[in-house]
Length: 231
Image (cartoon, rainbow, N blue to C red; front, side):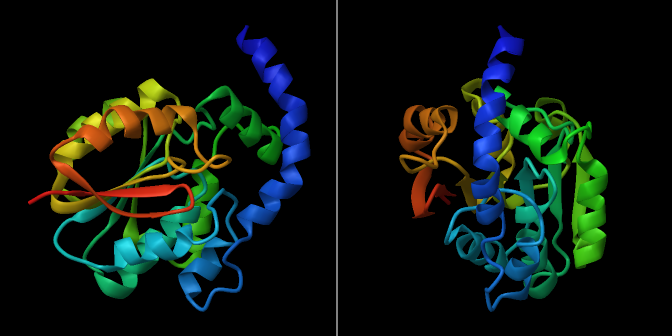
């Protein structure tokens, strides 16, 4: 069944690829140099999300930033750029298996974009060095459920954009929330919108985060929904 689903997804990604490239280049005309740099990296962020992510990361405060799901570093570039410019002692911890895994749709898209490549770790490092944010990232290659419990740091911002299946998103959130400082922000990508949300992410938001008494909604833009952890 898994092989059949991959086969069925294959033609869709071929049709999607031109639109993917267009979305991937959003931000190329931004006055913010880090958003412009991010447009040089493959990945999907929707209109307005770049600016909101920058604002979230640039507000500073104690603690570091956690990114679950970095792929080639598109969103990382914005997060790390904000650290470099606004809080240079902070770092972005990027937890990703870097194996082009995820949902069947994600795996199919990854392999259509990168053809025979088996992973994205070296592309991530190359982009970070080429675009000037390597010193502000801590890439951690591994499955989030094995990595997150052992990270010995606290975070002021958590950006969740890893595996998009319900169980994976739920697990990522459950492991990340205890490490989020009071007053810190939890940003969920692909959580909103008719065409931009993913069912697994939206279900976690609907069934867990929206009902969590320790959280309140902070902001939203396109598919990006942000919660603040109450003090």
